[in-house]
Length: 297
Image: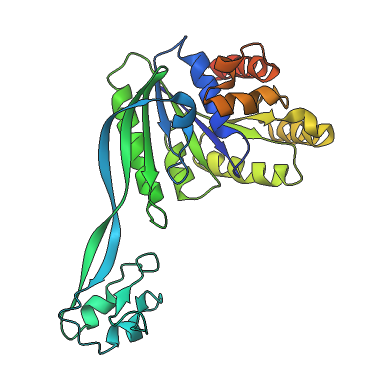
């Protein structure tokens, strides 16, 4: 198994569009398994249009719950809560209640309530799915708004995808990673053979690129960079290429600004499925050739 993860130090660099386009190419050459590890804003399925086969509940942390029949409105829970999660009675509400988003599940209110009127319940934080796409089995998830443990959900999705890979003959696991450098990114890149990092020639490009490069290098993952919308700022593109050259980072290629990408997204298709002759499609094909060379070595 070879594992490729698509990452960036920030959002909006074209990770998902690139992942979908690479899936379109790779599926003709390899047995492919896909994972959308951007569980807080999963959207790879928009371009792959998979059919959901299985759905699993993902449980998160604990949240406090007040039994109003037992509550004497003493206010101790309000006093001990350090997260402003206990909301006292007001003119519209006659009972103490818990703000589920603010509650951190510390259980201080549970332990301090003299009437044992507060319990702590595990929450349903989201769900994860096994789906069938034309390019291969897709593992993806949805995190509920305000919930935590997205890194744990990423690990759940990836472990399921890796388990599927063990059933196949020399598969490639292609992972659409989350933005940034936090816990979900670390979970997404764990065990990867190659991190493909799309960047763009903006003012903060090298700063953002440096962040993710330090992250993947820390975990011993080989990085490779491609420059998306490379022609919108040629000077910055040259700066990125110079930076990569000085740091010994393989440069996979440039993807020009191409209206076909936007049109393909509106149709819910990878750009190379929408228009194989588009400049972006041709550039991504060359980038995949460079990636294939890297994972063979």
